[in-house]
Image (cartoon, rainbow, N blue to C red; front, side, top):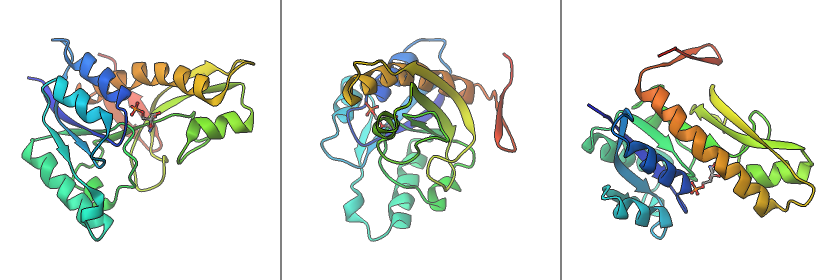
Length: 203
Ligand code: GRF
């Protein structure tokens, strides 16, 4: 039986598309039970619909506090019997109301080699800094901003002719490899957090 997971988005959802594609394979251990967006017009919602996945628009502006929003999120996640949650370009800070409901079961993708360049616009930050190697990170979510234990990372070169958009596109290709890999390990029960470190238990 595949493990039901949720993917939370705010935008275009190319990472969602990579997860949908991975999950379509019979041997992938997870299935996407629901996609939740805080933005009504996030293109990722179209991707969810096209794949026949329930999609929920949960508008943050309808709620008075982050905690109330997160309580509503948890309710939707419970309705869909979700066991793991992927934050895939979900542009919200999450609170303990959410994290305590899914302890050690929320993972995020960040478009930089953490701990460098956390927060918004990771690729832009790295590009402006002048790094020669950029990349992406999948990590467990804790209450900090992109501070949780690292599951996996991938890197790409920054080329002399790059602008931030060409670099973003190159980083995204790595993201699309990393996130399905991390979710596979997670839902196979192969990730063990030891202090700050994440061990991947061999299959
Ligand atoms: C990705 O770069 C992701 O790392 C960041 O937001 C972007 C989302 O892209 N958190 P997409 O919506 O998956 O295309």
